[in-house]
Image 1: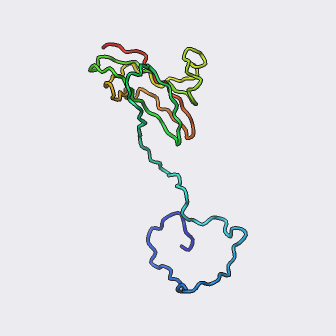
Image 2: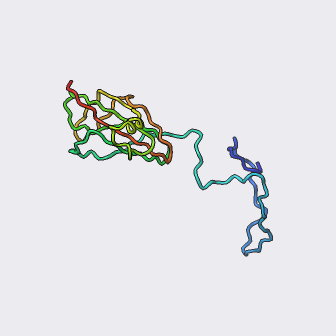
Image 3: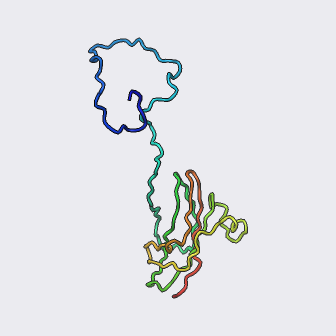
Length: 180
């Protein structure tokens, strides 16, 4: 067609346009001047400088890994996730040092809240308790030993959606360990 379309044609064109004249070897002065306004109602179709949103975006699962240092002696951790793009968090792996062939089961709870955890760290106040929403209450987490990630049981945690440019806080805590 003489006007470009956003859709590819079904068949290649068998009548390519031939230039009316060959370029000259000497520069010439143009008699054309720019118009003060666009001459068409719709912009011409040309490559964009930014990628466009896909009709069927692709997804991939990725890991966010942190240190597995030992001897921190903590039974819980609060942290913020700042999402640069829309994302969802499906589960967490924990660092549980004791591995005894599955005889000790750990009771783990995971909480979340919109915004930062800063100002919501005192779990003994009703304001703090009401701010956090429980995502996981798993009584059967098995340690894979020191320096190894120990996953939460499959499907034990609700997924959390975090929108682009948003902060989501998480609190992962070890409630207790019981002999099996």
